[in-house]
Length: 385
Ligand SMILES: *Cc1c(COP(=O)(O)O)cnc(C)c1O
Figure (cartoon, rainbow, N blue to C red):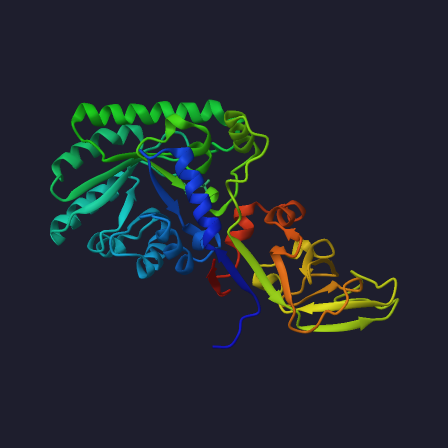
């Protein structure tokens, strides 16, 4: 196979550290489901899932049946997969037959699952999602009683794995009034379940932010997304943690991925010449630049034109001119000895220097999750120590 223009390395030891940190924080009574939607937030499902399994994880959450299929291809037979979002009617049979867990978010879906599971003579593993205030997906309050009746009727064909909902904005503490209301409503649904004798095996509503800062919301399972990859969901959650633990800083969560490429060409530019398209960058002195073989089509944000930097030979090399579709140039006038083929760090550490995702996202206004999840699936991901 020929070489790709960049590569992503995933650190097994950083992942292990993150999982240990989260386990300790969350407690051993709560199951941890790792959210690996959006190609594991850009980390790459195929490489990432087996790494997480090595850390003892046995439950993964995804947004679609397509992603569930990707996890299924690489996971251990006993690992559980849960679809939180889209599962088309025509793929229900596939999900039930493969023991995939999935959200049921309205009454119609519950009816069709019940019918199908009976025909297949195979138990469907469902999580009943309830509407608590996000007004996104979830069974409405006035449909809930009918759902419970149906669940009772279909008891032999449906395994009620969970009762769940999603906090809309737990990472921002100013939303607390809303989060508390959602929490209260969720407990009411659970009380109805109890009253009617339809008991879910687990309750789950917390994503990273709530799992880290709202202990009461952890219940039997949490769905951890961004934190597993080494990012605090927000400054609110980070400072809450420092306050709670009486610490000045916390290194328990570390970035797992590094993104690298190599120098494609080294060239000299005379004073007064322009580098790349248009007049975005004019050389004000004789310069030496390195050409890099990737651009915005490879997930490198165009917003970093004339602003970002990369690491070459352990030194920072500022971007000169616009990020092109498949190329960009950096200033290496101050870095001696750069050669074609030298390693270039786009995100990660080299020597004593480091470029984090935050330095990307601050200049481009992208969220960490947005930047990472846009990294093309075609970039190869490799596990490293
Ligand atoms: C994405 C997602 C999560 C994980 O969110 P993080 O903030 O990344 O931890 C949890 N639950 C649902 C329903 C989601 O869509």
